[in-house]
View 1 (cartoon, one colour):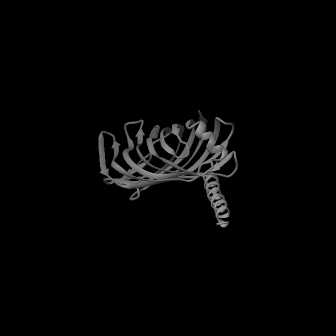
View 2: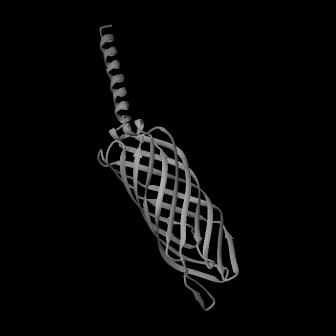
Length: 251
């Protein structure tokens, strides 16, 4: 009977230790607390990319590479243990279209062309102290346009799935990995030569991986540098190597 008070105290102490341990494991960091208070982020900034193409449309061979530069705009709702949503738009331009050849004739790129992307993402953000992991599903469109009668262009809608992560190096520096795989919903490629247009329809898989480095400038402002690699179609050589510098504001 004398052992009962001792056992009761031991039980209370054990339960308290377990509770404290669980609370510590799930405690939000300072940066995560700021996300809880300011879950909405808008961002904007320049982007530059190298677009490499090696593909065929019927008997026409497109084999070239061009630098594009432009602007990215976006919206993101992100906070620990909560629903995630994002939407972004990319618009870029280059001085000339891709060169291509038909039989023994070579056509050099003429005038400018543009490349762009519109995407929405929805998911859920899992968190642990100093870590955020957000699995998501997305829907979007990639498009390459030409600003002249002759040239190569393509457009593809897609469904995607992936994960976006953030790891806190310090209270002001985060590094992450963004990985995404997508399935096209119909790819339309076309080449126009004089008054004749050649078109090809296909479907394929693609992927996108980036490594964002985020520096927190204040409670509201941040700066993010993201080098990335984008493979538009696995069955063709359409590779994009890009870098984005974004300025974001949380509220």
